[in-house]
Length: 404
Picture 1 (cartoon, rainbow, N blue to C red):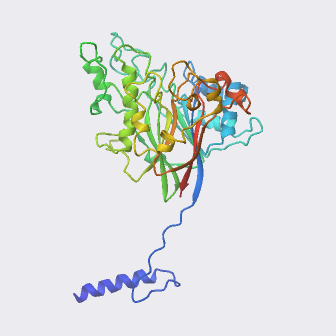
Picture 2 (picture 1 turned 45 degrees about the vertical axis):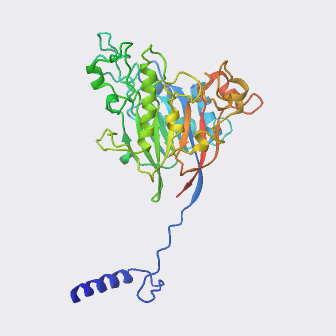
Picture 3 (picture 1 turned 180 degrees about the horizontal axis):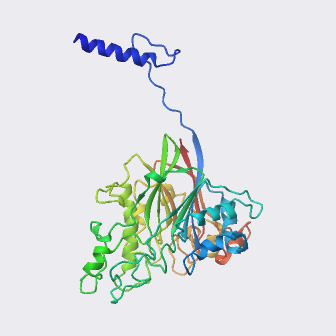
């Protein structure tokens, strides 16, 4: 007992001597450690399907070397500079294994004022590998042949077509990325696998054993604001729920691609990432779901209300998902009413009349404002996007309060 008391006294003496001289110890009791004072800042996050995919591998990468010669590139850069996002996720940006394409997009376009707007220099960039154009070793389409694009894990004419990228003013924690690119569709419990009219599986057993759920990728990239705050960027671009038959194979795949993120933020234990780590996010983690999810909550060809799996998830900020802060634009309200549509066209994010692009923060992140960059004809900048001049999609953004 005496030795134990001496040990405790020694530990207390060592601890006390390591403290600042101006810390007053009364009655042998240390004062409580003051809480860490966090900085509050408003950060703008955006998602933009830029339609920068080429007809052949390397085409976009080559064009970006002389980016200022292409009016489409300059329009896209002007839109981005008009919105000035701090973190930007791009859809349909062909993958370049060297990473040079996204560097050129940043350096040659965004870091040069296009229309008198402030240039942007993103310190951190990352191109995301994709299943598109990566051919499977088995016949996925069932036509007796193994060939592109139908037997790729994701539809594409070459590896990485229609891929994604991220640009950020804040550090991207590349070492702790989690990817679900290789996750097999049938390994999702109660997966919505397509069946024939007689109830038999649409895909062969060999195909199901190989068929990856993600048509591009599902990737969690941590954004580090400080040692006290990390926000997880959850990025994906599910297949469109069309270009199929009565089996609705693409609609069901789109549904389950969206479901993967809903299960991930609910920390479902069946999930196994490409490095073998199990489960999803814990309940204390902040996140933002980015991407062209190819699903509208009211209109279009989605299977079984696919996007509502996320929009109605309690872990998602409901003001942005379903409430007063659904991103909107005057341009959509002015131009985009389709016959029979149930959704408000001001919330559309595409020229084909659907809300398919999203920036969905977690419920613990306060949202201040949101928007879709689609000016009306009386507003500045409308010529940049009119009739799909820059892309057939519009940029979606959200201003969120980040405490770090």
